[in-house]
Image (cartoon, helix red, strand yellow):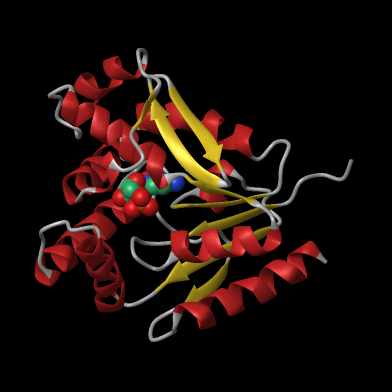
Length: 224
Ligand code: DC
């Protein structure tokens, strides 16, 4: 059997990683792995346990009782925490901030590392996150670092949240995003940065179709 191919897509929030990766995975018949969902689930569990998501001594003890699982239902990723499907509950602005906070904790990153790697052992994957090309899958066949201007990214995220009926404003989303990007890029543990061999793609001003096309071309070249 030929070795499975991994495509790593990293970049800041709202650059279009998950939307593009999802479409591309469907077209190429790859499994899409959304690693942000795992950090969100840890953040969500910290909040529900009444823990401060930025404090290792409060979050780390919760991990030993946390059974995390990714399941694929009709090709769509669902996240389960101790058997409970939390896929929708982890998409609130509050959980976004908690996810960013717990993601700075080395204990949390170590806890999630093997689970992420395991998904790429026996199948072709497109995995998105912040450290996929640098830490999780350093030997990925293709690494893309996807960015866009903060305003472009906040607009996309604001539209997504509005569609889901989440009460927020554009200014709030932009401020949260700028803070999260700063924190994600300046933490000590696996900060957000392009891998040396990543291809930089800026989606500012692109339609979704244009961005998908750019990545599809790169993916097809990597598949050979
Ligand atoms: O991609 P997202 O917005 O769902 O990610 C939520 C948070 O999780 C994000 O602020 C940073 C963190 N994260 C990370 O540190 N490493 C990853 N591979 C994925 C997400």
